[in-house]
Amino acid sequence: MSTDPFAGPAVVASEFASVASFRGRLVLIEPTDYEFDVPSMDDPSKKGDRVTATVTVVDGSEISKPVEIFAYGDPTGQTLPGNRFEGVWIGQDRLIKQLRADGERGRSLKMVLGRFETYKPGQKAKKGNPWGLLAPGEGDAQTARDFLANRTLSQVAGPVDDSDPFS
Image (tube, rainbow, N blue to C red; front, side, top):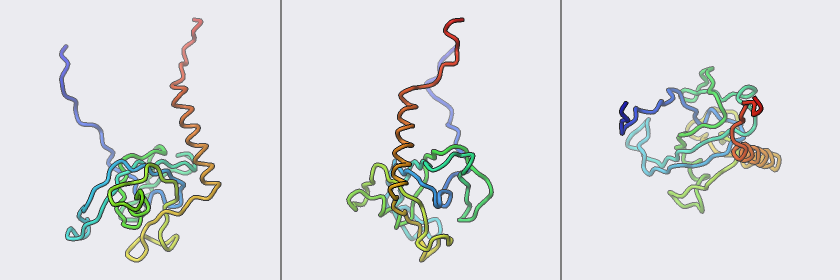
């Protein structure tokens, strides 16, 4: 049997979470990439920056509060499994500025806690009503601290071995 020096392509999800998927949810945003002057899908002559991030929902389980898929800002009724979503694109100018480290273009904060909401809460995002992040309150911060502590403990503990050592 030979070992090939290559691998097949990774499986890529066909449906993705968007900012609208996380509206009102307490999330940790961890930027992983920053792109400059990305052409707008609506008008390629307009360009803006884009952050790619891992977004982790910390305020509920996927069963009690699943993350819904939105298509062009409208709910689809479909939900995604899990609470951690990699490769979420964030391209709205207001959000990009809220994720900047020291306000410097191209430098993102390491981890940001907040809730996605539009400038006019509850209304559909559109021109004049952009997405933004609401600052967390102390209760939100404590929820995130507890979540991170539990995540760290489970990483240290490792997987559970169900085998019987005495058999």
